[in-house]
Image 1 (cartoon, rainbow, N blue to C red):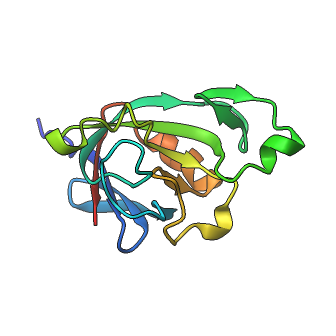
Image 2 (tube, rainbow, N blue to C red):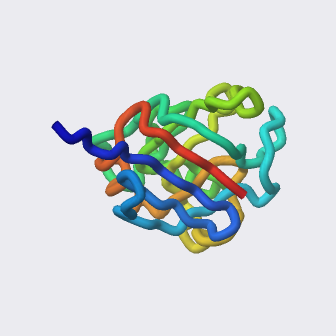
Length: 154
């Protein structure tokens, strides 16, 4: 019996693109936004880590597009809250680092998440996470599972 190829997520900070692959076959590609502070793994740096990861947790399945999350819980979107600079919207794919250098990724709360700044998708603008357009994230969320491998490269 032939084993099916594993689904993986590849993120390029250089091209600001996330590609979903099955083996070598490209299934989907999305523009993203990595950190405006560059790449790195230091706690508090607000940089996007690189290396090998896995999706540790999926949060927000079934919630309406545009749901605002605070501490990974849905909250009421007040006018004041919506003025905040970097909201986590729609869904959360919480990453865990698999390399010694990025092992702190989960504790740094590095996610692939939706954003209230879709106009900046395609350029480095986040505070460390990988931002996606909300509708794109809903689609990706449905196509991946926990433990899906993720590779982030410069």
